[in-house]
Image (cartoon, rainbow, N blue to C red; front, top):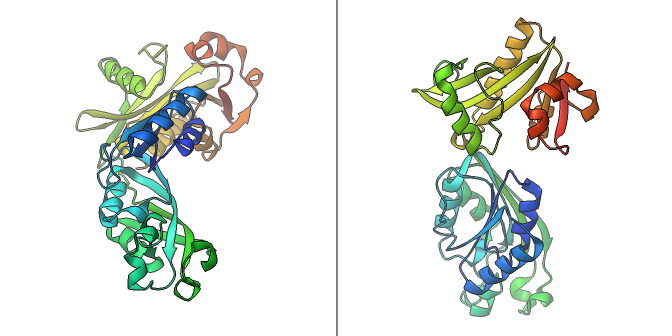
Length: 331
């Protein structure tokens, strides 16, 4: 999930929605009805279905805790009179391990008092700009780890319309990155991984449905499934179906609040170790959203025709996964 603060006419939100694909979502937050109307018109014109525009202020983001993967913004934070609140709100809505990546105006040396009080300088994104060190220190105070700030342009004072003596080498634009700390969960301490029992499958189906994944073929008799359980609550799952000496990995899902905690990797590692024990190889995979993730685990992309016909014809995934799905293999 992506959130754009001060989304205006919604162009960055629309680009983000296209980038995350149908399994993801992009939100835009703006406080003006005119911009929200323009954004929704652009969304409708372009046929975007996975974007939503919210009315509100960046000091009080109307989204739940730990719900956003990435926060973006373009030259908006400097306009806020309470930047500490903005950074706290960004940190609140980001998931553990989530990132903010914003561009904004920064000051490279102190501005004169009269300029900081100048209304035109405020609306021109100048008077409210933070200094480089101040920007980074406020992010750290909000809980972000290792904030980075890169000045990418220093403005010519003539372009700004102010006395060059007051603004020479004083104003720049910067790209700012920061990350919310990851929360690593320990298997055997924070949760346990176990083979799913027949009475677990209603919970498995609920998790798959909430993750926009199919439940077709997910039964106690059509595959083997492993569940990550904490205090009798299902946190994540993964399974496989056996076809001769090969396996089809499927139904990998982790609840949003524990993503980036190591739990997903532990589930996949547990399954792959089990497959080694029972001597099933290679392992095939069909995915619409997790190609990058499984590439890091050693899976390679293959053509669909490289998957044995028995797998595609027998598995419910063969019919439910579109032809555009990425096909992968691990030997």
